[in-house]
Image (cartoon, rainbow, N blue to C red; front, top):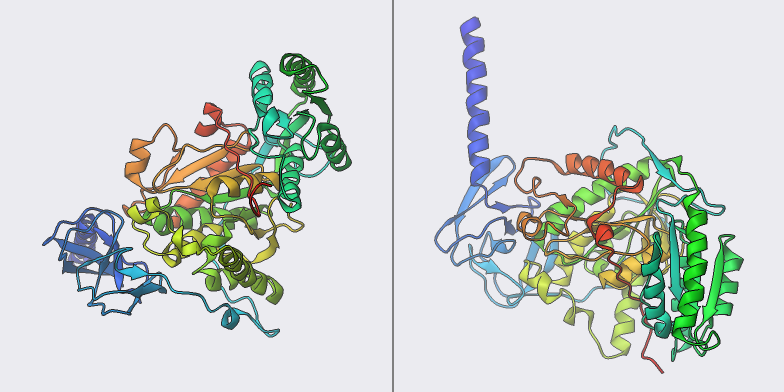
Length: 525
């Protein structure tokens, strides 16, 4: 009996060893058993083997041409007009014959138009998305600053806020003189149609009311659309935090205005310094989720890991928001399955339809700008492929609300926001809606940051992390190497977020980076 047990154990050890050896040879990933392409995780030279795993079996085929890192290889012959399948979903159709083992890219694969009418749900629709299993993650507390209104702050900034572009430089100088002060560079505030002004005011008042802001010093020029006193009155109707304002034209010019604003900011900073941190439950968090500079590793590893993080936080009672609605197009039917109600399901579909219609009215096509050149270089060939990877960062929990830009959520849980695909504008809107922190996935890499809310940047592209270690906060590449699971990395991200919201600075925050972009409806007037 002892000998049989030994032989059985020895066979098991040999099988594990063989599997580990095979795993080290894997150079491509199959995302779904129904897929007809795999995505490479290494450069594969013409004539070399493409090795991937399917249903526990390791399979191979010969590369018929050089295949770049993060790009797709055809598993079968794909005739012209054939659907290319990844994640079990269509990425579009081929525009030429593609042989087995050949490179599938943006030159031989094109996007298709959506049929939004057939995607709308009837009254009998029910939430049907598959949800990840709840994780036994310990509920955590974080150190923050109590506010009279709304959620606690995780930072205690003095915000030097311009009413218009003409006051932005003066705000920058004031902020540079006061410890704990931050400023934004605002690129508008004048010569706008009403819709643009409304958007700008939503962003400015959202920044001022943000939980990470203790007090606000406003600087205006004097002839802008909404002058400093009017903006101050708006903010004071929304919050009881200290707010003061100054005008450059009426205050005697730049130097005199800077002096007055600096004195006011110094006094606020002294007051803010006396406020003590308190412990708050994780359920008080509102976390923004963003992606930018995406490549194939984003949809395969970074976004699913962040999605797992989102599910854990939502299960703790927190709120998370995913935006960039143009990057739902091609995956909107999948995203809508997570809707808590029929109304929310159809809102998601209509957001995408209206986005396309808005661009079409100006004679433009969203597929001309999406995916971006950097996305295509990183292996994302169509808008569908980008979107199907993009939506994975929002997790799997039911979507309880669809927000317009810079609007605060009225419900806790997983929410989505209708914003531009431009990551800086998207982050701007989420921060203006009150997100205390942003988790930002990237494949190609980005240095971006925000003055008001810390931006935590994560990547599963090992090369990007190595090349941009000054900018990247978290390396998720262990998922691609098979060393960690998405569930494990999602749990680790929750721990890192817990540190950031209690005071740990992100790399962009330490640099003092502040990127702001306000979305516009139309041209200046």
